Image 1: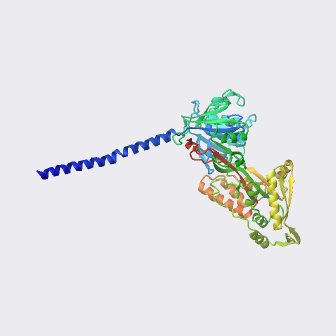
Image 2: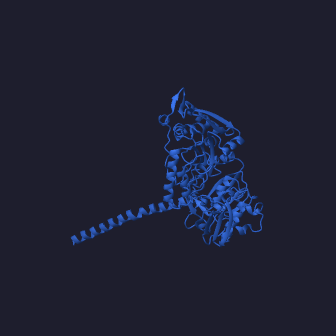
Image 3: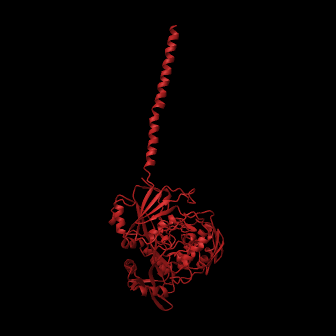
Length: 532
């Protein structure tokens, strides 16, 4: 009897302990689970799905008519091209589902089917034809007129197919098919330049214009054709209009806008040094020194190479551009997959420069370099042309003169008026000239190394490569060919590429997401953005 009692008591104790353990495990973990859910809910509640973007000196939201860079940047969110360009400078299909080069002067583009304008109409080949016609209209004065400058005819083959004919071959013409497409039906029987419909034309992009007054209001396009492939967290974008960049800086400091882009070298003077984040990216302005390869002395590659080893790009960028420009080595360096990070190997090295000149028969005497060739004495003495109106380039020219003069190469700077400068560029009657370009997105390098280039540079192997690459579609093969182009440039040095401009994407730390700004698309990654 007693044993049964002890057994009963033991069973009760065990059951009690098991029950208490269960309470500890399940009872006390339940509040923790609720806490996690509550935190997740709070995080979602704090996601603010609208942002505020500035535009300075607004003209029109119509991307074909606008001359405003801020509008061109925003326009990529509203209107779309046939082809896009990725951040590493590859062609990407957009409204087009495929394209082909039928001949040197003929391209066929097939559109994706069932893409709708924001008013419900379906995109067709006639919209593309309409857009190209507007770009070629001299009354429109579009910044995209250059893209279709060589187009002489557009044939609509069917609703989704169009053929573009060129008057002459344009290398990598596909990179020109990046202009925004507008709706033919929307503008039917309208004065394209002056119609009120330009206040909010329809697009095919991820956002649409819903109002355009003191503020332009964009709403998420719920029927965007690419929504399944690219998420868009933002529901709304407010585009605030300002007259000056100074007003934009003040608005940013007051947290009235969430981001801005700028090229200024003195950003900190306007908005301070704290309370914001930045992401830098290559601008499109490239400055470089061009040799005249037909000048008797500069026709010697050894002289050009020696000078290349002397010019201190870091010193130039630090002195003239406060260290806020990118040092340049080659025109594709700003991000093209065809450059692949290869660095042209001309670091500053005076000893190497001396050896190159010495092996070529040059002697240093009386603070200068000279040699005797065919019973004539040649000296390293050159003119350097620069446009006097560009104060920063004048500073760079002075820097180059000082560097070369210290080494024993005599430089005379010719500071000329803008009209004289243009004549020098046209006639190429200089020893050296300091110049620059706004780099396009096409990888075509014929303006540097092809016929009638600024350096009067001639090289059969280079010419053959330039002809070959414009018909290659395979990325791997194209990359290999461009590596050879870079090698020939290094061997010959008809130019010294100096520096690229730098742009800055400035944003409030409360703006969350992936930021991949580049010169083609400042808002790369906007699908991931939101405020908190």
